[in-house]
Structure formats: C-alpha cells, structure tokens
Image 1: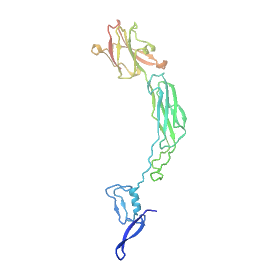
Image 2: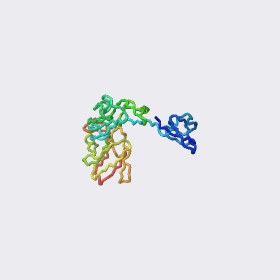
Image 3: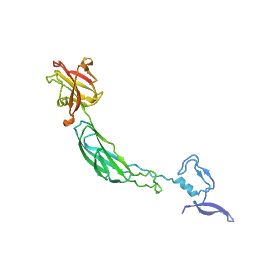
Image 4: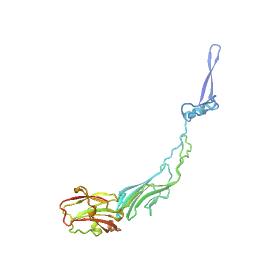
Length: 305
C-alpha cells in the first residue's frame, strides 16, 4: 500500500475556519499536467523525457528516486607462468628445457570448467588434463631445431545470469561458454656466434666442432651483430665463426690502428659445428686471421657480422 498524503481544506464552524483533512494514496493522484524534464538527468529520467498528465505521482517519484542498474559481468581469464626452472628465451639445440609451470583459470563470471577442459600443451601433446582451476606441471624436453611453445587452454560452460539492483534477472552481458588460451612461454633454438684468439702454435684454421666451441667468446646473434675480439700479446690466430645461414662477414676493424679495415685479411673455411650436447651440427663460416710471428702487443678487433 502506497503511503498516503494529506491535503487541507477549511470549513467555517460558526466562529472560525478550521482544517478539514482528506487522505488519499499517491498511486491514485495524477500529475495533472504533461511536461518534459529539462536541464537535468535525474533518477530514471533523462533530459527531455516526457511526464504525462495521467502519470501517477507515485510512479513519477519512484522514477526520480529509483533507477535500474543492469548487472555487470567480468570475463574469465587464464594465465600460464613459470614457477621454476628454464626461463623462456633462446637456447642452443640440444639443450634440455626443464621448467615447472602453473596454469590458473580465474572464473570471474564465467562458468565451470568442462570435463578435462583445462590442460597445458606444447603443440604436439596435452598434459595434466582435468577440470581444476589451477594445474601444475613439470615439463622436460630436449630442444631441437624447432621452437617449443608452452600454452595452457581452458574450455568453460555458460556463466550464471546475475540480477540487477532490483533483484531482477539481468541477462545482457552474460558470459557464454567458450575457450581461452594463455600467452605462450617460448623456447627458441639459436646458434652461437663464436670468436677468440689463441697462440696454439699453428696458423691453420680450426677444422672441427670442438675447436670452434672452445673459443672464448660467444653470443646469440645474426646479421648486423657486433662485438669486440680481444687479441692478447703473443697470439698467432684470431677466429670468427657463425652459422652459414647468417651470411658473410661484413667488417673487421683494427681499433688501435685507427679502425683500419682488415676484413680482407681473414681467410674463409667451412666447418660443421654441433649444438649443445653434440646436437645436430650445421655448417659454419669460419674466418681466420693468422700471424706467422706472434703478435707483439694486444689488439682489439671490432667485428660486424
């Protein structure tokens, strides 16, 4: 029952005017005039909305003081993170990737995980399949010449329909059944560039994988990679080696001689160089600069691949 309101009439009782009280409900009393809301948004009314003469006072007051606010929905998420072990990045082929990962499904307003709908994959196999929100897995594999990409995936059902602030169903925006994939943890195979100088008593180029891999300097890189090759006093040979697929040696500058270009003094040979743990050898371009007499002093060679 709506709250009544009172209006006052007066009657003359012979000596004075006294109030006469009439009571009625606001849901019965009509506005009595049609007009438009102007200059403001208030409650459920927006600027320009019409208020009709036949609208009840109760309904108009309710629209001023009450406004339906639809439910909001937050989408579910999935994440895959390293807990311990190998970090994502570049590794030599032949390296054992060993990593503990954790996948977390945050449901928010989504639905429950379907049967075996949550798992971790490396693209060829699926691991730890189930319907738990959190799964942990220890992944171990020797890296070959193709990248390893770890990703987690979850398939979930429809989420619930929430209510608005009037406790009425508010289905617009409901999270429907779907599938999510996490960001990837990628382990990329890469071949080292090797370099170094020695006084091995020979001016011949290094002719085997072990000799190349024993050089003192190394880094991952490709075309336009730069580094400094330090040549100690008494050296008889300087070596630069990198995968043949990278291309040819761009420039070598003798820093202590005004950055003189000495690229043409290097001789080119080819050697099959293994990856980590004797993995799959590939062709390397090997550039060698030799001195018949040991160097009289230290040198710095600035190298650009």
